[in-house]
Amino acid sequence: MTRIYLHPLPIRIWHWVNALGFVILIITGAQIRYPNYFQLMSFEWAVKIHSWLGFILLANYCIWLFYYLLTLKIKIYIPPLHHPIAFAKKALLQAKFYGFGIMIGDENPHHPMPDDKFNPMQQVSYLMIMAALIPVQIITGLFLWDPNLFGPAVNLIGGIQVADMIHVFLWIFFSAFMIVHFYLATLGHTPMAHIIAMFKGYEELHEEHSNGHDEGHGHGGGHGEEHGHSA
Ligand code: HEM
Image 1: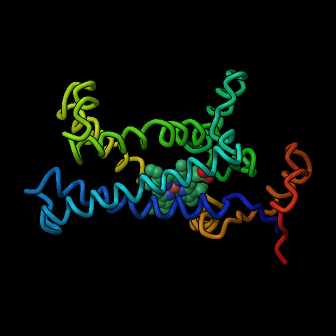
Image 2: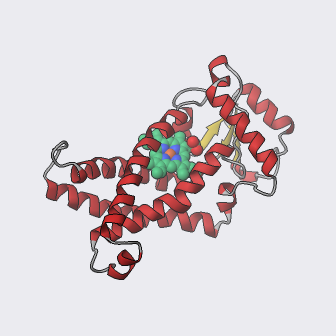
């Protein structure tokens, strides 16, 4: 069995702190936005926890950002737009696999490698989330946290109601994203395979898949210590 070192430690720490933080932010956000329907804790505690966690996840986001920028590995998030047709074909193939192929036992068309980790659908959605939606959520969160401190910027986007609307829309988006993301995370060769890999760092390759990978996906060599073979 071949195993590939896919998730470096800083990314694993970022990911799980972020995931836990998001769950709590979504719950406390629901309580703040709809205090009449959600009463898990007092409104004051919901605001306190939500604000503190917002700052923790802001610091955590910097781990992700600095890691990917300083190692130049951010490339794995950038779709190859200089080959738009090939990229669109790969994306369609991936969508066909998720929508149909997976039900009849087809092999996943994408074989993750450290320098080609994401399939086209992951690449586009993760790039959008990490480069745009999380920063916008952080910025609008800061505006809501202290509208006076950020007064000029709040006015620039049309007032605090606009900041609030964007923040709530993204809260809905992230709640839906987590459900879809969780479902997709269970589609490895066992339901827990990808999730365990996100804890351990190593993804185990399926037999026929690892043979295919070794024989000619063009990624065989060159990853040095990032490759490992379990006993
Ligand atoms: C219970 C919650 C979560 C679970 C079980 C989970 C699971 C996973 C797994 C298994 C992977 C690696 C395989 C893959 O790329 O699909 C992954 C990667 C990723 N997840 Fe999550 N996730 C959760 C929450 C989140 C949240 C809340 C976000 C962001 C809002 C997020 C963003 C990402 C990103 C950007 C990656 C790629 C990381 C990288 O390799 O650079 N995840 N997740």
